Image (tube, rainbow, N blue to C red; front, side, top):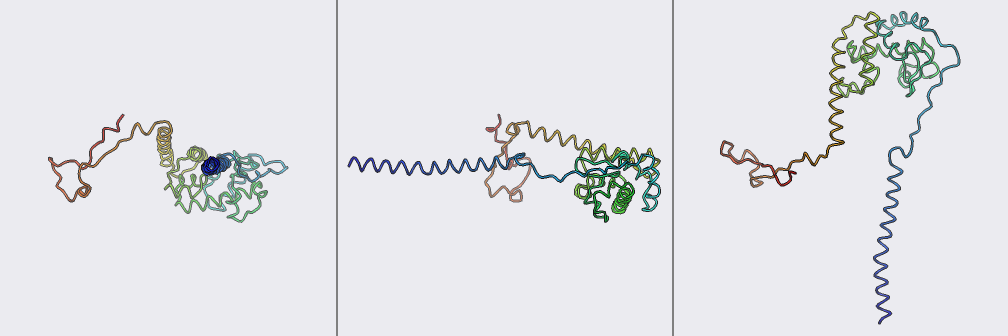
Length: 262
């Protein structure tokens, strides 16, 4: 009997321990999976940045001399082309951005491909780059009805962002870029109305700052300190206001539950 009792106890202990060991293994696998999926655990593969050609870059004066003919060909105001070139690359035909934008007008290869330029190396050619970037500006001017503020924002942030936000782009880079291009444009003698666009940039900076403050509050403030709880004062079937009179003597449908206020 004693041996049977020991056997039964051993079996019961085994029944208890096996699920625990399985649970522990499962937890370990889950934690390992979570660690491997954690941000920064696996760096995404990024395409190599374009390499500038091994040839002398054109001078600022040479680039400036090309712009009038390119602007005239595509029907874009010369001052706008000059402003974009100045803001994008400061007239450096071999400029490459950290995200892979190339040349004088800092064109992304997929954008250039929309205009038939499929060679990244070709974008280092100043004439090809100027013609492609100016064609892109022309299309944006047509799409946004010559609204320079929206055109400049779309050139920097992309049409999708401008359209989704109804032109209320709050990216700091885009706001700074838009202001810089407009100031270059005015400096080069541009005459299109741009004051409203500058005013919008200032407004959107305020929106951005408000959004940042809100995000900081959410991050650092204990939300339980602000939580309120209400409880119905009437039977559930009477919570519809159409089912009872509302007047000076009527009972409120809800009242504050003070037991949760700390």
